[in-house]
Image (cartoon, rainbow, N blue to C red):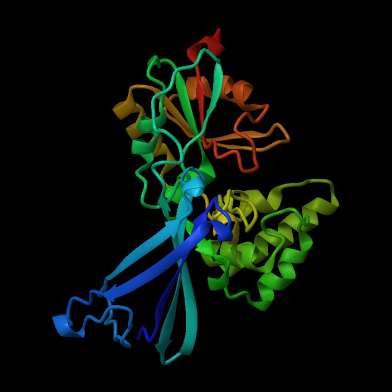
Length: 322
């Protein structure tokens, strides 16, 4: 049962004193309810049957100062809903971005740089990943050029992020996480619990034991190799550009298929990468394996950055290969 459903909208990019008015309306659109039962601004406790879905219409109206119009980056909808049943009752949280088309001019700019970080609007689950690449790809590209996208931005567009408030950590995750470096995404109970939920407690515990033993003999990184791909790809809160800084972002799915489809549709080489400020470049997938060394050389300096640059795409011109 869903006894409550609330939405808290947040305008990202402007100060609170620049907001004159903001109003939210919620209208349930339950497929099995009568029209007169679909009340605006009142959520009637609803029984959601197994394997069924329901819908809701959310309307956000806001008025802001004219000087703030071009500061808006996106509208972030923070959703809190109740879940009630034999297990008791608890709150669940979801959220998503409504992108602002005024934020960044989509478009097909031109540049003579060999390696170009491309600034985009704040991406979200309503964006089509291949459509985003097409929208921001330079006009003067060549089929031999390479367009890369970060693994976290792609995962966000695939909806692969979890509100940390939804993660219920158990004793295992609270104990195991203490064995990781404080800056690791697995050094928190919620980050570790997310991995356990994906890979399973048995695999994570065995990986942790073997990794810990081998680490005593100077062999590092074994846990990440044994615990599954997501062990390296999970980004805990603060690891992703706001407003996703309060979300645990998983690694993207089907990256190989994505690269092949995107390359075929856009007529350019495509790669999904994981890059950091330490010069580490990991290529998750690429449409052309022959470009691996070119990509690593071009991205070693991390031109996209790891802060809030809002540059999830990097365009590498084929001249870089020469």
